[in-house]
Image (cartoon, rainbow, N blue to C red):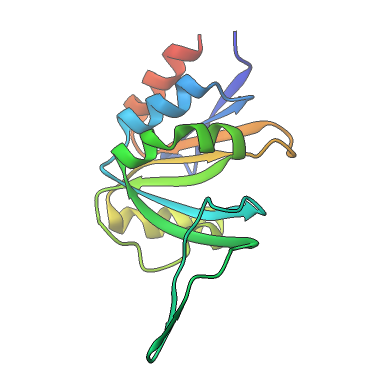
Length: 156
């Protein structure tokens, strides 16, 4: 049995804190979440070839080798599922939502401000999975109790 605890944030957002979150739970979150996924704070440490970038200035284009980066990007739910080995191994901050673009950095807001702002973007699920160097606790939050109950039933 996986160790977890359930809480209620601001009396309306349902949350699960899960120790060593199983990969099956990450995939279930994707299945239950909305069709767009914003990934924030994705970090890369010297894994040459895992990212191709092109810098363009006037008539010059250069393809540098990325040595380190930290960025945010938008995926579809299917793309998120296809990349699940990355999230399981390296962690992620993922927000599942229906609006195709959230014009601010979600993770930089306080918890209260973040959830209030996200209500304008039809969010269904927030998934925070730590990397291997952290304390091992993941957090899944949703405004929909039924989503959290579905995930909790798999944990039991």
